[in-house]
Image (tube, rainbow, N blue to C red; front, side):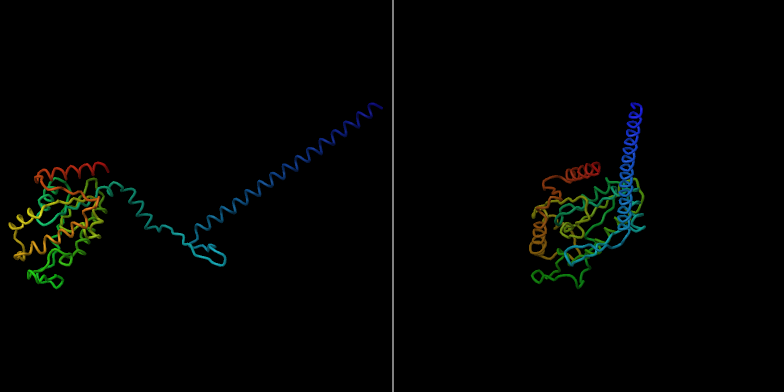
Length: 280
């Protein structure tokens, strides 16, 4: 009898274990099925996202009943090549600089620029005076008070051509694969007042000069056409005061105070340029 009961207990225990294993197996299957379904959903979401990235435009819901188009911008092959080229030649982008030298009439701009050009290998020079319209040009402004054209305003200059020439120089050297520094020295009395030109400069220097110094130096210079009596007092200096007033608070300009010799001014500017180039 005892043997019979023990046999029945063993059978019951076996059946319970089998049932338990079946239950665990079912749970494992359910978990596995759940993981597989989640995996599949993630794949669907990823594919949908990638498909969106490859779509030029997408309809996006903004407010109820309103939609807007969002454009997905992609680099063209040309743009990608240009970016790659720029990265590969990163050094040359740092080797092209444009430096502005300004100041009033007879402040020493030309002398300083000439000394800098000799001391900076690979440098070039553009002078604003080269862009004056010829005498008699209809774009010049007549000043009846002194019976003379006004050569101190932008209308007396072909500033568009000057900006184009500076940009051409920069584009030329930006395209050249080079291991040396190229510098363009731009000299002129109103180069920092003309926005399209001013924005091209990497460094700016202005030679502050007194009225009396400018007056005395101008008397020794020959102009074509020549100055007429009263032109400096009534035209040259008033326009300088106006132009200087527009830039005097600018922090991007290095103002060189009067009182130093030409050698001292050159040394100060040259050292500042050297420090700037070495810091890049």
